[in-house]
Length: 376
Ligand code: HEM
Image (cartoon, rainbow, N blue to C red; front, side, top):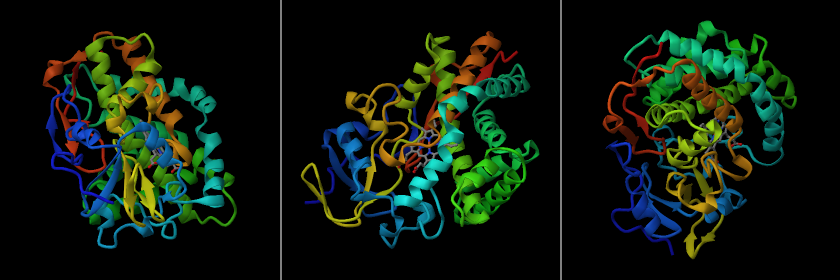
């Protein structure tokens, strides 16, 4: 039987909290069981999975799908953070079967660990130049740097002219605005995709690697996914990562620190929407066909079954993050540069004064500000 959770277990709480305070509502949620039915931000029930073992099973379960045609019909797609249906937009995130396998194959070599290792020096150059340009400060790194740096890295990778970087920053910010702004952002992303495809880079390589019959508009959407998914997530992670380095000092193992930050402060605190394609019983809870399902990634930080390192921060199963190696490489590059080239860098406020803002949606929390001095 689907049962609404007891009061206090809602994980969609907007607000501001201190750095050390846990995610609101998550402890009560886990205490309520491995599958907890709560009220979705866009209304109606959603089944939230709170244990890592069950999460891994759900993320590989072919009966729990990302087909957004199954979403409650009264949901406002933009407000709910619902992706377009597979028929509306060809996307890695919603394609299934042979189409999805072909899309993944086309993306994989472009974002491989080997390729990312080769690009690490260029990422470090980008981080160094941008941090130096920020000046001695104090400068709030989350107003511009944490957004612009991942966009510069992914833009360079795809072949986007640097002159269009401001457009990319604006499009990402617009995309999280209201529905009209979101639509305007998509038009801007299409222009960015077209510009990248006109230059040498991975956008053109992706175009060549994709199966025949995919239109330019469809490629633009695939490029949008790379640009936006990469910015949104890496942006918030960078804030927490830089704060950790400046609070705790240089790490012994940069990769381990990056993974730990992603595990503790996952930029995607929930997976994207999934829906039961048929009746599914999860740990005794019966989900009717169409029931929305989320995995509580943020709540799984301390569950050993989440796996080592970043745990489930990049998801798992067939839809596991396509940009994980890129994200790790660009985050590690910032730590390397901060430690090696900016020894005087320090937080301009006590670490205890930092605040994180939770949007109360599927989105991750981000630092309200990150004033840093000594970037010389
Ligand atoms: C720290 C940074 C990042 C985090 C934490 C993150 C997290 C995630 C998660 C949790 C998923 C799976 C969602 C689900 O199954 O519902 C995902 C998927 C995806 N991510 Fe990332 N991501 C990050 C960076 C990136 C970057 C840099 C890119 C590309 C440039 C990217 C591209 C994608 C794409 C295309 C998918 C869809 C994969 C599919 O459905 O097959 N991500 N990401």
